[in-house]
Length: 291
Image (cartoon, rainbow, N blue to C red):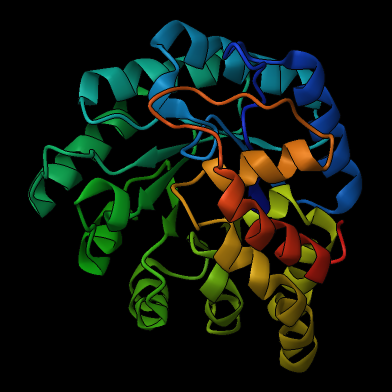
């Protein structure tokens, strides 16, 4: 089981929208040195929705190659068509990814039984560890804890990224899924509380900008050092808020460019952070000691 701070890494892009492999390599080097536990490649923060299927598979392969075994790579392979999710998950396995992260099908609003069938079929089709991803604020689909419990019985479904921010979900998930099933927060603002309540880590946007501080906070929370975790999280709280002043990954890509770690590139329909919002993100970066 991967425990700790997992970064949902941006996909750095040139201003024309091309994936910037040099910047990607430097970002992976940064996280390999910062105490990050693993990297999610081409997830929501990695703009998976705007990469076509060929680019998606190629970019996952680049992540694996550039990481070179230093960090586990969890490939974002979810889709709202089961057949497409199978193809992307196969690509991830063939590229050598360590696991796959599969968001609940967005827009088409499957039932709980539909979610069970969707994820079971993918798990049966591709022999790679798979992590469920529940983020109803973006998908209009909420995978309920009892559905996760049922899916946890599928051998290669190994965890869930729970991004509702609902701390009360940890207890039924842990009780129903057992101690070996990974529970990750998908909400930076509440991840400390989720870990103190029994979650195993976070898949984090904030960690793009403050990887060392996030890794330290997660280590403290997982060790039950609540006061230390709270103190460290106070320095991160501004980032947790500011990185969502517009749709993710707009603010985090601005922050990475401000740090000189990535170019000013993002793909439509997302647009660059407007100047009037930049001071909020800059102030939060200063509070976290990264700027």
